[in-house]
Length: 267
Image 1 (spheres, rainbow, N blue to C red):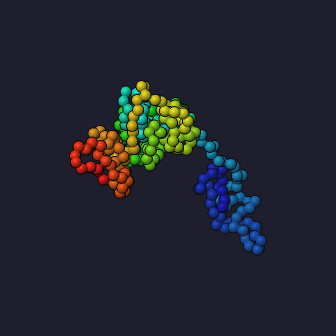
Image 2: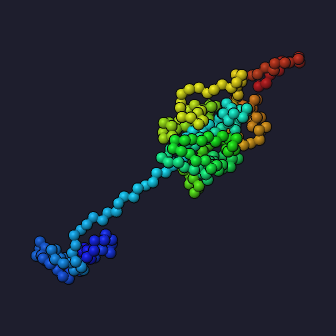
Image 3: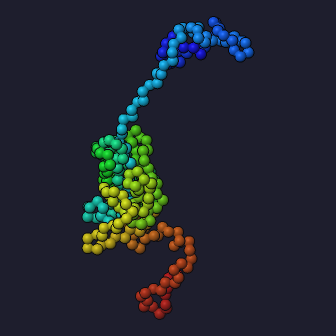
């Protein structure tokens, strides 16, 4: 291969010597199809020069990620005076090196039928800054029976996602440790707007009031009365197959008040 009298590095710079002229002999005394120490057959011989392009600097970018989320609340996290499914939250953090606007990004929960994607507002996050979106704002209600939380960029690409199987304990979040860049853990203490941790305790409601939040595999988006009947009060855990498939699991239950002659019981 011979250069065609130019120092420009390109495919067209190089051509094949077709044997005219030839110069010198090879180890078997055959003619060499080339022009060693002579003018190239297709131009003037030149010294090879390095023309490697200078590396292009990659500009720093912002990078929002899902940093923490709560699927089963037992505390008034959004401070609206009530404890309900709208206290669920998703925290977004910018782990990039520069500011980024999250306008046009969306959050959704892939497994839920009733929740629509939520388009994030025009908020600019500085490096390391985070923002918390509660269910009261997003109307994204995460299922206790498992769900997938997703962050999607304006182009429709899934940028970050996490799937959990079931929310067994109330006020236990799924979070990244170390904060922002680590692996996922499903036993974190809720810290909306603060550094993630697995240590510490959940605050107690004023007056010592408690809130029962049994596990429920029904979608949170069903009517409230239906949820109460199936997953609260007398209906708590009614979805568990154990209560229906096992016989004699509770024994004979005597009827407390019985004014009749015969003793009654429910079996």
